[in-house]
Length: 107
Length: 457
Image 1 (cartoon, helix red, strand yellow):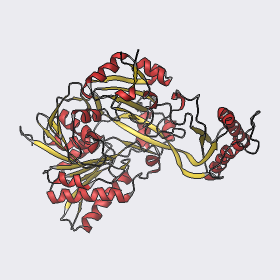
Image 2 (cartoon, chains in turn purple, cyan):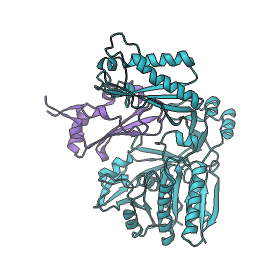
Image 3 (tube, each protein chain N blue to C red):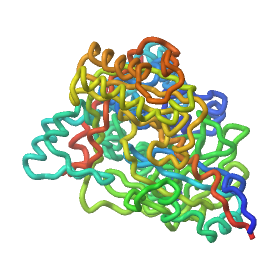
Image 4 (cartoon, chains in turn blue, purple):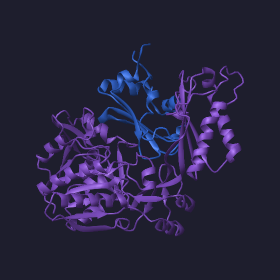
């Protein structure tokens, strides 16, 4: 089975605060075929996100496929509220790293 | 008042006004497009709890003044209203006063003909919230937080409430030419004048949601460029004004989910918009057209509250490590340093944080690669204590004692870590977000007193 990295398929992979207690992740595709490929592959799902980040499912507040944007979007509850001492990512903007190398089966 | 076929053209030069100066070329292009309103949001809670708690602005006053000057001169020349919401990053009363003062100074300096400034405050007194709690009127928690209790309220320095469209409409009704708002829902700042004109609420709020970060809804990525929105009875259109940018279906839809937990709903005081049925169409090369967002009125008026409380004074230290054995055992080194702090200061009454760059600083427990740290790492030490003197000493203990950590098999016995500086550095006091809640209101204006004054010559 051949695979490609998610970072080679998606146009945008990003994370950002959604309020002070949550971080939201957007994986956005330029082509409908790529969007369909990834969402059908199952490499991203609530369960996959839990596995990748070592999270209990209760920390995932939203997981949606947003067709108009060709985007997969999920949101997690923060362990440490944004900007509290010990939080090293006040904007939540560097949490997407572990998504880049996800291997997507391509055939 | 409402007439079929009416529309509103809004020029937005900036999201989070003041955080970086606007690019003026695309703003000038926008002024030539006959806008009927110039509007921007200045707020963000991304800057952390410190600015709200300490009541300071995280943006330099020169940049705030720069943007306000361009907006004010443009608005007065065209004779159209100008609205800025969430003044001064946090929307605290001092942020509103600062922006109102800048507008008055600019009016004098440029000898502008007399006009009316409307403004309102969003700070919420702790006594008001205490009375609500005591009366059994729960201050509900958001995002899984429990209802606000008196202890948490007591540990809070400042609270602001998110205004809806109501104080903006009130000030427009009273003849304001320029409005400076306290903390507000981003979309309400833009929706208010559209609603007042009788345009559909779904489109009005949706427009605000798209416009509030200006050129972030366009591509390629470029900040601080202006965009133009037009709300009609049937649709909302958004156009990129920077010559290199376009508003595409991809860029606009990507923005509708930006910084939001969910792309389908947006809540604010008075209701929410449901965007599940929205349709997006490329209208022309630089413009996207949106139809069918729905406004759902709230059954109960609830205002979102943001509050921050001080934890203490803070010092920061930096520690480098290159020895692979020490890196493998960095948690033991940190434990040693923390133990020295406990022996000196006891187990409580301060905070000591060690953040290990090169291993798991940024993701913390979520880091899948935490078991394969880099060949060199940096540990950032933060100490928080009631006084600066104590914070400095706790930080020095947490930093310098890493040098003396006792690892059984270490080769380097002349010091276990590398110092960039053999000192610890004073940092801003530490705060935390204590309040992320909602409060029930009887009147959507009850937390947002409005004022009008004259400026100009």
